[in-house]
Image (cartoon, rainbow over all chains, first blue to last red):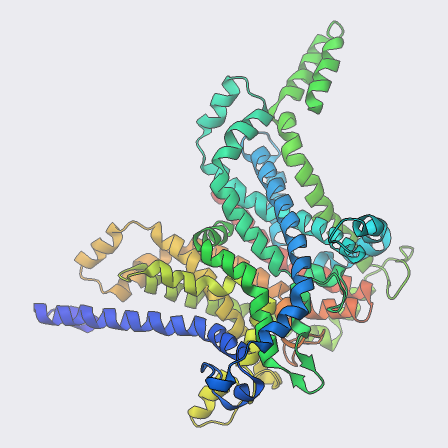
Length: 309
Length: 317
């Protein structure tokens, strides 16, 4: 393609042809990668709605035909997952709200005011984003199991709440853990937004004699609604999808308090191998909440990722 | 709120030391103190969790703590570190980790850059395509591990369908120790290249259009324009994406665990993160795994330290 321009033969026809060829190639690549990203998902969905016999006989990505179609796998997976869905949601929602609120507060305190050691404190937040969680797993397990067994302490209290069982108490340490470790990233996301706000907003408030709290509640909170959306979606996706903390604090995929991610790797497995129809159904059911959020708010999700980098 | 109480208290003692008092009042009215409740509470919570946790982990790594019971801090030494560094399992895991880190990061960056350039100019509905390319990032590693487990299936997986159609023998992607790590890297690239694409697209969009125009007027081909003019300007995007990817490669545990549903990942894919979790929670070797975790942390700091220093120098923090 570059040859036509370097030889210097400049007739319009070859130029048009060149451009068209390039565009065709460009679109072909776009479609190729569309396939690359979608094939694993499409195959999974097709496998989820096929009978075992059909899975064995047909191509993995082919849709089921006639008697090969079934909703049995999805039904079975839903029955297996329903309890853990509830666990996942009652864990993720408060954990997300908590870390997003704390993140916003910290970012406000660190951007809207100036003092000397600010950069040092900020650095500690930034490093907190990148710390591999393995470095705190052993202390975490010891803390919540031996030093401060909060789950055991509040179990009777949780059991008395309607719709809750005693074992849901195990999710409380998990929520606190997620809030604490979610604060750094939420702070960084909010900080980048608050820095982009004009200084005059806060200055005007200060001249009017508004307290720091008033400026936060009356000025900052209302205008940071879009950023709350971004951080909330980002953080909910992270916490709902998270595995390692749940794995450390809620032991075992058969524990009644296990969230979805903990249960999924064990579903549909037996001594004779993995039933992929059931496994794929479960994988999709597990992904539904984050998929819905992603399809509805793809731009916000992308923004969260961009700001992180 | 606490600041108000303090200021009142101070003003009671006005007639004594004026200089000292006004200094204190000035301090209490400073932005530092008045904003403290905002950043202070999250900071304390975060610090206990992150830095308290790291410190505690550090302390445990010097003991011989294992099994049930409590750690004994009376004898502290580096025995666990020496044990880890001389064990074959640790060295093998470190090697795998290095391969994963380098291979995964490099390919993700290259593919992400390619996708970003592909979608940057002249594609209609470019945003829709971006949404699809980024979609795997919204899924849990537990979910993507299941999808790829099925893709890699020996009898009916798609990859072997392709391989056999091309006339080769089926490959045991995850069962063959010399291939398994490559297969895992491939799956992780599928999940992450949309992320690098998004980071690069943001970088590309900050480059003014007239640079493309100027290059075009000069008669430079598109390929040359990108290689010579555009890509060098994406250094910052590359560095920050690389840092995120490398740190991920160090701590990647979930995908490997979820592939098999047990502590030991497929042969040939054991990395430091999986080794650490297995030693801790399967065998109860707390001190030993804390030592591995500390080394993992040092490696992560080795990646992010220079990056943060560079960012700080640039004034972009």
